[in-house]
Image (cartoon, rainbow, N blue to C red; front, side):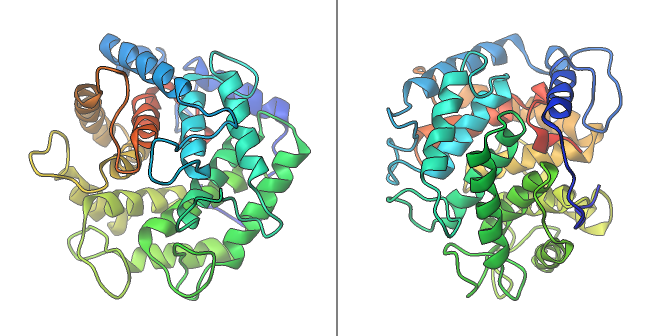
Amino acid sequence: MPIVSMPIRLQYAATTVVILLISTGGVHAAGTTRGAKPVDAEMSSAGRVVVQTGLAWLASQQALDGSFGNLSHYGPHVGITGLAALAFMSEGSMPGRGTYGHAVDKCLAFVVNHGSESGLLAAETSHGPMYGHGFATLFLAEVYGMTPRPDVRETLRKAVRLIVQTQNQEGGWRYQPVRNDADLSVTICQIMALRAARNTGVYVDKSVIDRAIQYVKASQNPDGGFRYMLSSGGSAFARSAAGVAALQYAGIYTGEEIQHGLEYLRHFTPPQERSVGHYFYGHYYAAQAMFLAGDEYWKRWWPAVQSELLQKQEPEGFWRGQAGQEYGTAMALIILQMPNRLLPIFQK
C-alpha cells in the first residue's frame, strides 16, 4: 500500500489487537490467514536457543541510563539503542510487559531524553547523527502504538519534522541534518522511519515520499544494484538490499526496479566466500526485501541467512558487527526473529 498524505489514526486498542493476531500466527504479512504459527514452520530449534542466548547477552549490556553502544567507538548511541529495543520487541516484549519489557522501557527513556527542540535524536557522542536519528525514529514509531505517552508522540512528531525539513533537492538525506547532499544508505533510514511514523498516524506529505522514491530509483545501476550517491559508485550488496527494501516500504512491490534489484541480491545468497561489506546492515534490509517479495524469494533466502547467522554467533552469545558487538547482536536478532512477524514495519 503506497504511502499517501492522508494521516491514518490508529487507535491503541486496535493496534494491540493487530499485534496479538500477528503474534499468534493468525495473520500473514500480506493479510491472509495461515494454519500454523510462522515461528513453528521457519525457526529451527537451534535458532530459538541462539536467539534466547543472544537476547540475554544483549540485555546484560544495557547501561544504567538505558543506552546501548558503549562497546562501540560511538559510545551511548540512540540508533544502536533503538535497534536493541527492536530486537527485544521482535521477541514479543513491549514497554513494561514481557521478558524484556523493562529493557524496552529504559531504551525508550534514553531515546526520548535525547530528543531536542529541533527534533534531532542524538547523544553527545554521535557522529554523522542522521543514521542514528533514522533508526531511533523508527523505534519510536514502532513502540508508539504500544505506549500512549504524550512525550513519545511529541518526540516522534519532532523527529519526523526534522527528517522532512532536511530532505535535499535530490530527494535524499546525508550524515548531517542539512540539505547539502545525499547518499543512499542514510536516505533509506529516513524512508523507513517515515513509513513507520505514517503507519502510526503521524502526517507525512506525499511529496516528501515521492521525491525520496525518485532518488532511490535514480540510484539504481543497469545491473540491478544500487550506487552510493547519484554522482558516483558501483553496485554493492548492502546498499542494494536497502534500495529494494525502501521501494517496497513505499508501496512498490512489483516492476522492473524491484525485479532487477531482487535478481542482483540473489547473487549474495549465503553462504558467501567473499567478504560482504556492511554485513549486518545489508542482511537487515535483504531479509526484509526477500520477506516482502513473497514466498518464492523468502523460502530460499531465510534458511540460508538463518544458518549463516547461527554459525557467526560467538560462544558468549553476541555477534561482532562493524559498529560494535551490541549493534551486530541487535541486527542479528532482528533478522533471526523475523518469522515472529511482530514488528509492525514488517507488515505489508
